[in-house]
Amino acid sequence: GDAPFDLPAAPASSGLAVVYEVSGPATVSGGTLTLTGAGVVVVRAKQAGDDNYLAAPDAVQSFQVLKAVQTISFNAPASRSYESAPFELVAGASSGLPVRLRVGFGPALMSEPNRITLTGTGTIGVIASQEGNAKIEAAAEVTRFFEVTKAALTVRAADASRFFGFPNPMLTGTIAGLAN
Image (cartoon, rainbow, N blue to C red; front, top):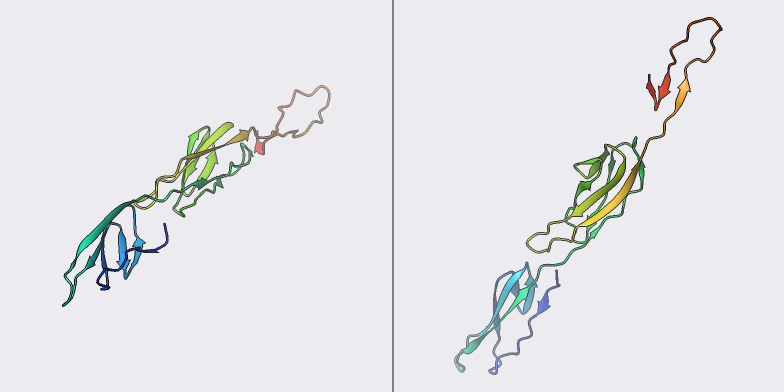
């Protein structure tokens, strides 16, 4: 992730131009080196000589390019009621790579893309991860928790008026919107 940089080689004592060759996860253009990935980069500075000067011995330097580090941002969802509809969770990685969310524990199911469905009440733990790639280290997993509360019940009698001497009626009503 570092920006391209100029190679700090001094010109040959002859004053002739120095040419660079590179191997590993980098490219060179003129005297500017661009990193293209993680691994060992070997830079070879060459000066071929001319009619008046012999070729200079090659100067070789190598260095390790480390993978970039990334972090995950993931805010804990607000508490929800059991009857809540499935909803999306949002997490991001500083690298811009996609973040995978999964239910670590609790009564919920995760589907793609990062949609959670509540299946009961209690504490839900959601884990965010990003495995990295050839250029970026895996991010440390982040776990966020939220509570799922019981749904509110509403009971309403269908008809309460009855006369003395009639048999006891069967009560009917609605509970949480379902006819019973």
